[in-house]
Length: 267
Ligand SMILES: NC(=O)c1ccc[n+]([C@@H]2O[C@H](COP(=O)([O-])OP(=O)(O)OC[C@H]3O[C@@H](n4cnc5c(N)ncnc54)[C@H](OP(=O)(O)O)[C@@H]3O)[C@@H](O)[C@H]2O)c1
Image (cartoon, rainbow, N blue to C red; front, side):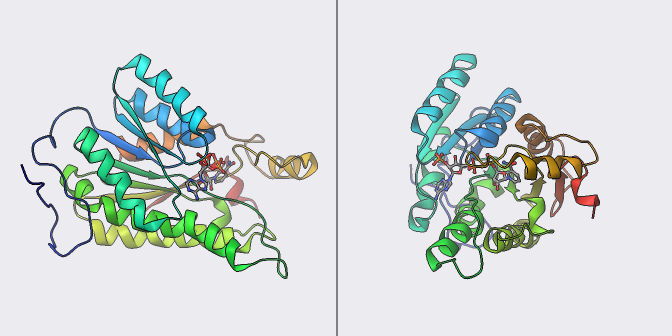
């Protein structure tokens, strides 16, 4: 049977939903950068909530396979892996196409993948801009566009993982902060453009997991001391917020939920 095209505008760029399999099985979430750290916690939380999962990864192949095995042991054939560089915009439609051809539907797109490093004035090159803006802003837009038809069909949602630094920039990280600020603007714009069928929300974590190459304990302690809850958050606490927005927030769209222990209310 020929794939059926869904959506309100037949000229839209999107991936067709296969008509024969579209209503079968549990809901499906696609989590980008889902093999490790916060992405893996989001994957586990949505899976524990009964969803099937598409775990996107790029370099973390072993971690992705281990997570797939762990979750498939709990529910067989509930997790598939997709691999790709999100900077390769032309291939983003494939992630959605593979999801639909395996699971037949898409209910939640979680734009979690990110790159993060300093871009000091005077030492930043165009490649840094293309990478940071590409992963944190451009890919979320083009993935949402590719997924729009499938998400509309399931009355699904998009969750963009931003950062409290989008509102209060971290010194020497202008490009990352601007990309995440753009992601918040994109969240609101897409909430308008993809409604009424699709909800679009963001979360802004504060300090959760330090970057793997960050060993500046003094700076880390300073951040914790300025956080009302006096600790860092856990990936599971971030994942719980994503689960809420995906499953329990039927009248919430265009919003940003800060998961930061109160850090953003302290000057
Ligand atoms: N960690 C924190 O405390 C914190 C605080 C505020 C906001 N956040 C936000 O929360 C999210 C998760 O944070 P995290 O620290 O867990 O993220 P992370 O470890 O820095 O990155 C998550 C994944 O993104 C993937 N990725 C990076 N560049 C990619 C590319 N070009 N193509 C495809 N995948 C790419 C990588 O996948 P592979 O490993 O497979 O290559 C990586 O494992 C991010 O959006 C981050 O900005 C985190």
